[in-house]
Every structure is written in C-alpha cells, then in structure tokens.
Image 1 (cartoon, helix red, strand yellow):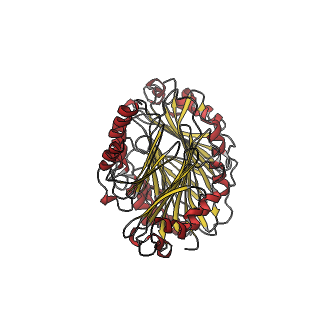
Image 2: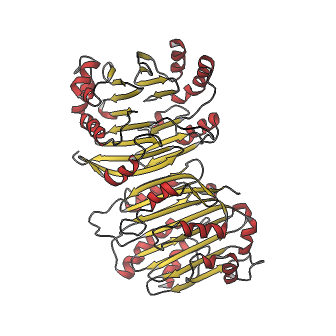
Image 3: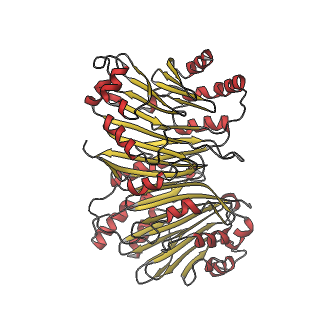
Length: 299
Length: 299
C-alpha cells in the first residue's frame, strides 16, 4: 500500500517523510504537504508548485482496485489565490483552468470565488449535489491561511534556531494550540516546518510553514468539532501573529458548528487585534461555508 | 441640464426617450436603459454593449461643476456575467478589466464575484469604506436578472402584438407588480420594452426586456423598502416566468430589510416553483448583500 501511495504522490511531486496511525486515521507528513486517510475520506494538502490535481485519477483507480469502493460521495478542492500564479504548472495556472480540468473528471460542478477577486481571495470547487445521499455524518473543517508574517516569529522554523521539529513545536507554542494531540512534525533543511496532529475519533490538525521573508506563509487546518471557533482562532493567530489571514469554516447540517456563520456575521467583526475586511458566506449542498478575511490592526 | 445629461449619455451610447419628475426623483427612460437622479444619488442602468463606465469621469465633473458637490460618498457597480463577453467594448471585456478601470478612478476598491464563476454569476465592485461617514439613511436595492424566457410570455413585448408600451404594461401584468406606481414605459420597434415606475418618497422600480428568443433577458430592480421580499419575488417571476433568475438584495443597517439575508438563508430554499441552486451573502461596509440563483423546476 505504501508503494501505491508513493507512486501517486510522485505525480504530485510529494514524498512521504513519516506516517502516524491511529485507530481511525492514517496521517502522513509529506515534503511540505500532508495527507490523511480514513475509511471513507482522503485529504491531500499541498503547497508551492505541487500538481495536486494530477493525483485525482490515479487515486480514484487505486481506491477502486484496492478497496473496491466505486462511488465518490463528495469532492472539495480549494485554495487561496496564488502569490505567484506564473510559477504554477498546468492545470494550476488559473482557477478557470482548474475548474475545466475538474469538470472533465467529475462533470459540471460548482465553482465559487470568495473574497476580493482582485486581491486576497479563496477559490472552491465541489461536485454537484448527489441525489439520495442519505443522512450525513457531522463534518466541519476550519482553515486559516496566513501571510504578512513577522520574521522574528518565523525564526523558530529555521534549523539554525530550532534543533529539530519537536523543538520548533515547543518554542513556538504550536503544542498549546490543541493540547493532548499526538504530533508528528518535521523541520526542513535549512528552514520550513510541517506538523500533523492527531486526536481521538479521527480528529486531526495540520500546519505548514514557509518562513522565508520573501514569501512567508502559514496554513492551519483542522476538523475538530467546536460550536464556536473564536478561542481557537485567537490561539492560532497568537502563535503566528500574521498581518493578514483568511478564515474559512465549512460545517454541515449535522455538525455542532452548523450555526457558526450566523455567529460570525454578527459578532466577529473584530477579534482581538484583528479587524475583518471581508465576510462572505454560502450554502453549498449540505454545508454552510464562510470566508472571512482579517487584518492585524497593530501591524 | 438636459444637454449636459445628453452629452454624458452619448458617451455610453444611450439616448433620452422620456423624463418623469417627482418631488424627489427624476426618472429617465433611455434607449434600452434607465437613469434616476435624486439630490444625493445617481443610478444608471444599461444593457447590451453600452459603455457604462465611460460616463463616470464626466459625471463626476458635471456634479462638481453644476451642483458644487465634491465628495463621492459611495459607488456600486454590478453586473451579471455577460452572455457574449466577446461582443463587449473596452473596458467591459472582463470583470478584472472593469475593476482595473474603476480602481484607476477611485483607488483600490472591493471586487466580489458571487455565484458560480464558471456559469451564472454576478460581479460587484464598490469603493473601500470611507471613514467618518456618519449615520446612513435606510437604503435597499432588490434586483432580479432573468433568463430562459418562454417566447409565449415574451410576445407581449413586440410591436406586432402590443400596440404600445401602455398596452404591453397592462397585457403582461407588469402594472400589478407594484400597484399605484406612476409608470413611464416604452415599447421599441420592432420589439423590446423599458419601464420606469415611480412611487412616493423617492421610490422607484425599473424593468428592461429583450424578448428575442436567441438572447431573451429581463431585468427588474427596485429600492422599495420591505422587510420581506418573498411576495414581490413571486409577483415578478409570475409575470415573466423565467427558467432561471438571480436575486440580489442589498440592505444597509438602518433598512427595514437589514435581516433579510438570515430569512433568505433559512427559508427561501424553494419559492413556489423555484428551487435555489446557489446562495451567497457578504457583509460589505454598512450593507448586507445576498445573491441567490433560482431555477424553475417546472420548465
């Protein structure tokens, strides 16, 4: 099975660095990327000039051949606007090109762009609603994509400052974001950091850090269910102190977070030092989805 | 003053067909377009291959010279995706091009795209928030942009069927949408229809109809304040019976419609024969703004 994953990941330009397994989730730290595999879900998170969409067809084939699964219940593909779109490789040179590619595989889907289409924005593609899908299990995903990062804060993620991944996790305060997690982290040479955290019941979080000042970038993602994510948002921005961050929250109708978008709309205009500059929400199939963009008013 | 308007409208490729004045609003029916002028607001609605943005700089100059006003409180520019983008004239060949043009005049603004970026969607640009603007007057705008129109319904808007604009208004049922309005309408040769309706207190509505089957299109817009627009939505779709329609609602924080987006999110998934396929909302400055897209399930 590992050889199968490796052959798929090679198409995306990713390598497996380490694996952690819990009862319901296998967590892979990849070269500046992460992968999570559970019985009915596959998550691949990449960055840089990886070619994520190249994995889709071989993945469908693998799941069919090895597991005997032949129905795709749902697909979500999302990303922030690229910092340097010209560096990307097809089909990732533009969102419309990615959408055409995905429609070619899955048929006519739904493509939304949230936020400012001429500045910071976030693109999302999903397949059209499937009839007769039945009752959904609770599901939620929260993601922060952070930029304008202070070089002082980013220095933890250099080999010259932190001895190894464990030291970076502790020195930076990442270990306090969701305590009691089993953390599998890696500090790259000469800099860069990836961590996967695992909690019981298939809960995970993942952090990827590119600390170089020219293109500093931090992503945080988790599926931990909470009925209010304000405290978690604050813990994350306290660790990374971004000048700007997006916050996206997906929650389906059986999730404890299902009404979070109403709470967000009314009560999250400022959170600590952060002022919201954009708020969009959408109802997509069984999901409420919101996109917020915040700027640090102290930076 | 009429000569001034005419010179600006000539830049947009529009001509004044008729004018109706009330105590607080001047309403102009133009060639397949409309213009409304009140003390502190200017609305220009065009269609086809008009060049709306060409009017902006001369308009700012005119308002400064004639009225002595020198501060722009707010700007909103919006449109649906074009049916045939290649027919458009610069700067209207793409939304990013329009945004660049607007940013050139007003400085860095906010540009959103609602709905499906690869299919039916709606673009909106507004200027960045102005500090110290003071308390806003109640303000709301509702717009339906309708396509997939039944040729049987569209026949009212041909000279060969309706004698004149008044007959088309009555035969189609347009006069029942917002009764008690003073209606100024025009039926074009050989087909096409425009109407402006005026109500007390600066309230207006406007309808533009392109009935030809190859590119049939109807727009409806009003600023009439209501705390729930469901009945109005139904009256409009009952008259035009579109296969598809967008519904956008803007309401600021002092409007009676300020909470309509919550009502929409929860209770407008189906309205009569219409099934919602997209729902997006945003908070933009003092406005709650929602975009919904509906398909007629009987068509």
